[in-house]
Length: 226
Image 1 (cartoon, one colour):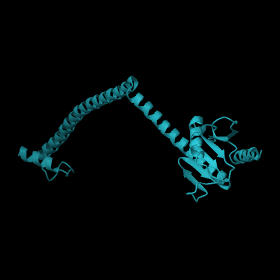
Image 2: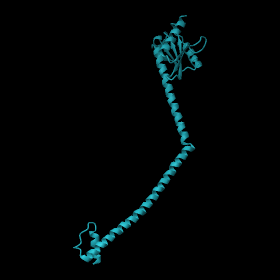
Image 3: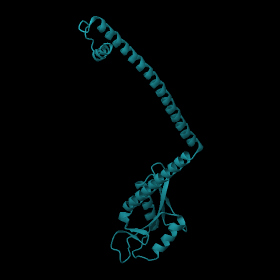
Image 4: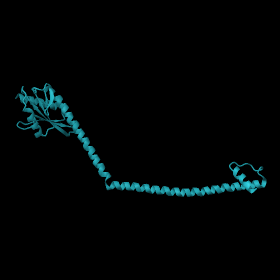
């Protein structure tokens, strides 16, 4: 009866400390410790199971750990804890990991529960991120190896080729136009210089006003005329 009261008090303590988790007593005769503590994420997803074994005797028994480890495997639990005042003779600490099972004094049970619970949450978060990255990587690989992606790349390359050809055609056309205009401008300038040179030949160079930009051309043409 005292043992049942202790279990009820412990279950209530866990439920108060971790209201988002599932705290359930393990039925007598069922393997899995005394209390099953299912840890939930803030979104309600299950991320691990802790089984708690409560010992009320004053003397340590070496059979406790192997039995609880077997219960942990049977319940597929992630962690197992024995809450006891009696510790192995070679252990002086009130909280320790012993042969794969956590041992702690009752006063430290909730603190240990908080640490173990946070560890399960951290592992679940890391696994979720890794799974998400793996999913994203697989999706990206599927996309870049798809026919749709290759068609888009081919379309971009074809568009670039067409743009490049258009630029080349425009360049050839403009260069032809520029060449024609250059010849026309040169002919206009040469014709103007010829007129000035001829006039200088008739009325004399001194009488003609100097026209900026045509000095050398008109002088050269006048000399040729002489």
